[in-house]
Length: 450
Ligand code: NAD
Image (cartoon, rainbow, N blue to C red; front, side, top):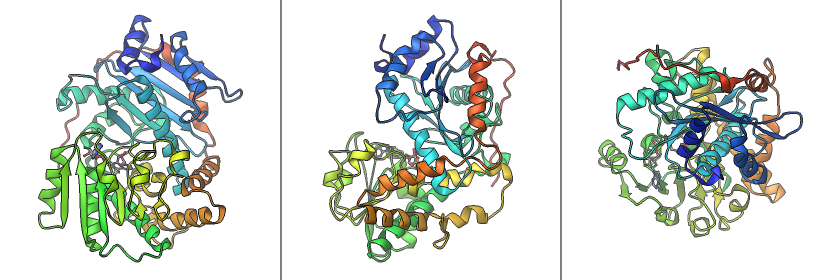
């Protein structure tokens, strides 16, 4: 059976047929060979072995069927040399298990690259939960079950991956995760966490845009025209930053009416032109504008959309914007500067990654990433990558990937590659055999204190 082409639910069914609640595929660190927990995962192993794009000797991927929610919970770990795998957990619909696994592989690598370029002592990880057909994801009971299950799953993984918020996951969901594991960041401020990361992510992307304008000698954001794909959390705050800098206008699109209405309500008199579009309608990308900001989900920039781009700068928050990074990065029209996503959108992870060290208002460890003079800050890192690309003739994507990969091989100064030890321990100690009962989960109600 070729699982790769089946739905994520087919893996749940197969695991249940084999009376399994847990499964994994790991890369043997000595031989580089893939090792699966069960023979029924062989088709996944073969697909990964044949893949030349997304599987990059990831250290491991772990799956569990949620005891209360019956959802497929996944964790993907690229590299833990700089520290435990860090990255948010995404709740999303995937047609095929291939899409689900590819998303986890790409996102976890991107997180490691982002952490390395930001100088954070964290590795690359990502959580992915597959949505199911005909479920009501507004139902608080269902969400509580899913995210408490996810916390239990992470407790079982013993800290090789530390989660955070991502697309489809809310602050309330993070509180549910926190009720069943300590291996999470990005928890609501009521529980001592760093809260909503989108405000800083928005600010960081704007700094990267300013670096690109400076590099191209195009002045400031004042008077510039903007096209923005996606008007969700990050865009909501980014629009304020752009308006503060007196952009001429912003054209935006979203597939969700509510997201657009929320922005319109917030900025009633701003020069905005926002439209609801069908999923798959990428016409916003060819808008005649100075700056194109991809703030929706990944993969919208590909061989079809890139050649039609008219913007001089492309820079946004979405992770994995390029469908095929190496090839697609070469397709941008002459005169268009593409800023790699993992170079620009670091502030979400910067905001939450070290929250266990305590919270300080206007924390200099965080705000320094936004400062123009800081050598490892967003502004200087962007200029460094653009200069490298100019001298080598390669694309900024290639240069940023190379630098990130080099930095991701620097071992954590205290803990070394502890993440790999944890993964080895899980594999050797029979992690898949352990079965958890659903009793005894605490109930968390999020209280809002303004
Ligand atoms: P979000 O889910 O709040 O917003 C994304 C918006 O894009 C949604 O409103 C959605 O309806 C819309 N969308 C999806 N597909 C679309 C399409 N084809 N066309 C137009 N709109 C579409 O997410 P967010 O928190 O605003 O994050 C935006 C992106 O930035 C995501 O890719 C996320 O992974 C990435 N990111 C976010 C943060 C953060 O701090 N929130 C940090 C780093 C990276």
